[in-house]
Image (cartoon, rainbow, N blue to C red; front, side, top):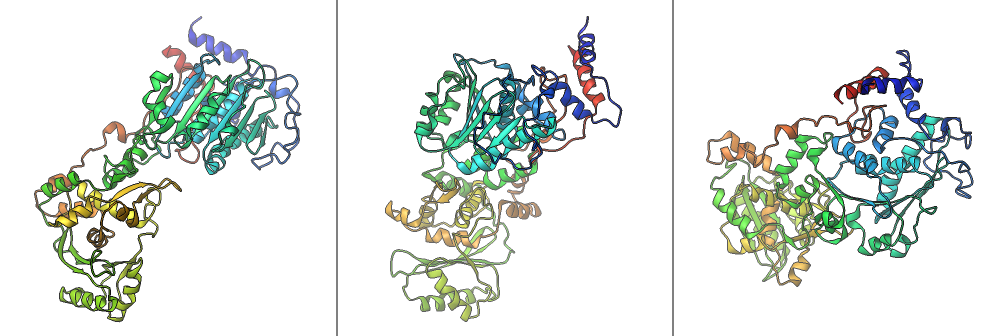
Length: 594
């Protein structure tokens, strides 16, 4: 009997015949898979009458295992994706998610030879919703008396994402079968049919990670570390003492090139890991144009782009925003005054001092500094007089809204004095203002410095021929904030502690360019006939055709009997609902190919 006839005979033997056109084909496909469960799960008595409770968590956590079936019943879902597709019928999984799902099911690990996965994924890839959650729910349904332990260093991450996605899948399964198969308690989920459990915790105390072992002798156990880059080494050491696990998953976005998760990546083969790196180009739901904008905005060599889109570990702490070699290359490349007819822009950085720190007023037109005023004074009233006279001499309109003043410290006191002298359009900019890109930068000051760094990297700015300016430009460091993981500049207090001067001249130059981007200068170049036009119109690296087109949907070889098209509800694109005929067609097509 050939493969096609064998499969068709299998479908017929299960009594699964094509329904009427108005019949819900997805429900029939789901019944088909559930009918393959060991025992007769669909005939088991309901565990309670509240199977449609919309809440994620069960209010009663006492005696949580009392409701587990005496005779365990397991399900025969071939891999996590098969289960997820049946629960999320209108969504579509990406190739890399299908690949990982297939590997997790194919592994057949034991406690003596566990399957170890190290997954490094770009931001927004869907790893919580479409890798971790489907695996955990599949693991609980297909194993008897198994234990899944999920941990993260962040309680917010665990509650808002990981636990929520797992709980939603469990409740969707309850609704699908019309009874409570899963009992969902905060940080604790029990499959009442199989007796398997999921325990979740977030902690920086190693003692709380110890003491997990299989629920029964010889039982299976999975340990999943989410956002593993932030988990302390002591936690991993404690988890490694939890003997009996046969699955070990480390999943995270990349971070600094240090710590346990970084070593798991760079020494994956040596340490026995299956290593997977997922970039934004592997995720069809991510907008290629937005990826390209980020490449232009931050630079393809920047830590931000490499971490966010290429899933690469990058060094941030203690790095300089702008290196001396970058500044020198920019001077060599940029010889053209871009935007000579633009309106004059003014940046004012204020400091009260008779020596040392300076008050600087920089006037730029396009990409060029056209004049400047440097003051050493501790008399703020006289400072207002001098700035008023300078701006008037330079022909700056008093109602111009292109005058930007540092609104911190002394600058806040200078602003009303300029207002009294008729400068009504002055814009106050506080370094601590929220950044326009709140995801990457801790504040506006950091964002403005990185914007200048991008202009320099692309060779789009005429840097002042000033040795002190260059020293200040190439001395500013940045780091990653411990509080929120965002990029933040080294403070001026920290700079002075290291013997560095306050970067007053560069701050004034940065303020004068506030709001301008690489795109603005490139657009101006395209209008002219300069030597930079060709460079401006050719990206440093263009997206390939393969990167721009959507990756074809991949179907693993063990998931043919009830194939649906599916993928992430919140982050990935919906597709048309699949009919029963198309499901059977997938089976037929696969059999013919094989």
